Length: 116
Image (cartoon, rainbow, N blue to C red; front, side):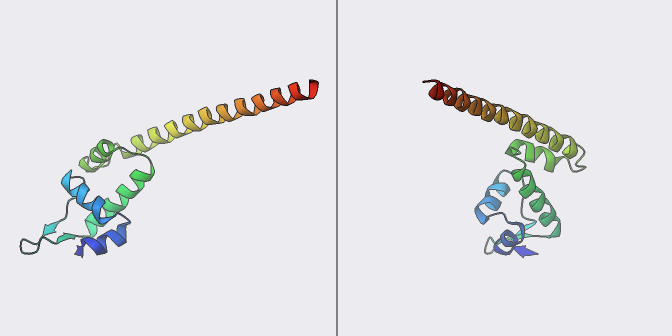
């Protein structure tokens, strides 16, 4: 078992994040020592912790992360990741369209300056 500080280093999740995740029942310690209240995590917790790191990178909300973790079969995980990916593709296309409009704007103004 790993103390919270060691587990934090292993997973890349801050101690504050781990405490918050425990509070909302997203990633709870497997054991809390009743004498000193130290939190302990195990190898199973590590796998969930690393998954949560990726889900955060993939822009999952806390509610979506709870949904994934509570669905122990991870049946919906692929669907949710594909949905997030599609949203990102659409956002990239939207942003590229704005960039193209900016380029067109500069070209239009460049032509106006040359004609003046």
